[in-house]
Image (cartoon, rainbow, N blue to C red; front, side, top):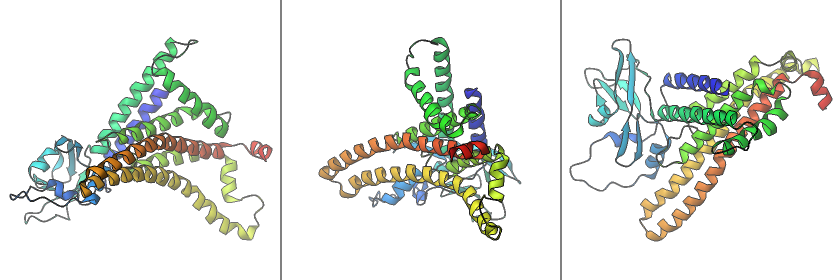
Amino acid sequence: MLRTITSKLLLVLSLSVFSINFSFAQEGHEAHHESKEATHEEEKFDIGQMIMHHISDSHEWEFAHGLTLPLPVILYTKENGLEIFSSARFTEGHGVYNGYINNHEHIHRLNPQGGLDEEVHVWDLSITKNVASMLLSAIILILLMSTVAKSFAKNRGKAPKGIQSFIEPIIFFIRDEVVKPNIGAKYENYLPYLLTLFFFILINNLLGLIPGGANLTGNITITLFLAVITFIITHINANKHYWLHLVKPEGVPTLMLPLMWVVEIAGVFMKPMSLTIRLFANITAGHIIILSLLGLIFIFKSFAVGGVVTLFTLFMNAIELLVAFLQAFIFTLLTSMYIGSAIEEHHEADHGH
C-alpha cells in the first residue's frame, strides 16, 4: 500500500512540475551561456552569481565545473507544436537555438528581427535539474521502500537486517510518536501519505547536500505543492465540527462573527503557507551559508582563509545534515496536527479540554 501511495504521489508531483515554467531561475546565469572572450582576461569572481547558479533551477545539470549533464528541453507553441531537443543545443548556440532563446533560464521565441516575440507563448515542459532530481528521488524512494517491505516480510518475527534495521525504527517512530498521537484512531488512513511525505522530503534534503546536487526542497514551487496536497487532504476529510467551528466559533458573540470569519479564514490559509515557507527558507538558507563560506576562498585566495573556511564548512554540513532530518520531521508533524484537528470528533475535543 505504501508503495502504491508513493508511486501516485510522485507521479502527481512529476506531472505538476512538468507543467510549470520555473520562474525561480538564477539571476546572472546568462554569463554561463556566453562565449569566452578571445583575450581570456580573468573575470572578477561574482559570489552572488555563483550562489544563485547553484541553488536555482536550470535546463542542464552541472555537477562540477566542466562536468555538465544536458537535459531534455520540451517546448510547446501553438504554431510549431511540440519540440524536443537537448539543452546542449543552447550551450552550443550561446543561448539561441532553432528560433528560441534561453534568457536567464526563461525560454522565449525570437521574432524575425532577433528580438523576443511577445505574441508567442512558449510552454516550457522541460525536464530541468529539479525535475530530474525529483525523478531520481522517486526512484530511490520506491526502491528503498520496496526493499524494506520485502525484508520485513522475509524477517517477520526476527531481528531486522541490512537497510531494514535503519529504516524500520524511523517508520515506527513516525507512526507511534507523530501520526498516532496527532490523528488518533483513524491514523492508518493517513499513515502511507505521511510516511511518503517524510521520506520524500528527507531524501531530497540529503541529495541537496551532495556536491552538485539539486536544491529541490529549496524550491518554493515544490514546497508549495507539498503544502497544497496537505491542504487538500485535510479539508476533503474534515468533519462537520471543523467546518462549523470556522462558521460559528463557540462562545463568540454574533456581532463579532464577521471579524472571526476573517481570522479563521486567514488561519486556514496560513497553515499551508507556513509549511511552504518554513521548508523552503530553512533549506535554501543552509545552502546559501555553505556556498558563501566556500566563496570566501575564491575571494581572498589565501591558504589560511581556505583552511578556516573548510573547517566551518564541515561544521555547517554537519548542521545541515541534522536540519535535513529535522525539517522532514517538522513538515510531517505539522501535517499530522492539521489533519488531526480537522477530523477530531467533538466529544474527543471536549474530553481533551
